[in-house]
Length: 256
Image (cartoon, rainbow, N blue to C red; front, top):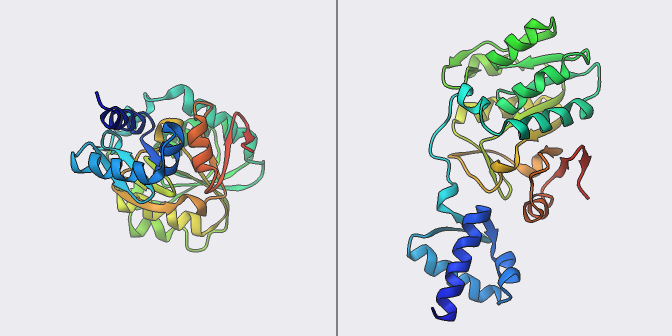
């Protein structure tokens, strides 16, 4: 195998491993010039082996193809979600108002927050039922129920926020690529945007498997969030990449 073909193979493996890598980072890893990597990425794109995007390239295998149901998501990455939930317990103070979005990571967080005298605003039916069992103070948005994710969406749900002043918006995502926070449905993104616009602090939660993945809708830029809370599975490359856009909290502390 020639030097160039070997390099192309290494680039393809790196991109598949990380989901996304910048041109500069690939050049550093392989100890070649960024110009060489740009030519290589163009060739790999022409062979339909990667997706070339501004500043780097993304794995074709990392594009999310379908939306799992809430029950299916509750069985995925449970350890990571519980770690994030525990971090939220220590991060969110008592006696505040919190928007609790419809993501399953946030559903795992609900039991960790119930004893903090929080007023919850949620559009999530499962979160509402979990909080109700514990006699929490809850504002349920109402709206049209989206069966697949058991959340209330649409104009009626969004109107519930008109007169609300929220301390913390806790939001979720299907995937984050560079500065793009994505979801599978425009309405899911829209209601999170409304909640964010009525909140003092904006927090996005995502376990480490969500990094370098992209769904069909970008609903917010990562640098518009005050914090990203993730689990200890995040690797150093992703930590460096995403720390450019917001403060990352993992292992219970803010990453330096």
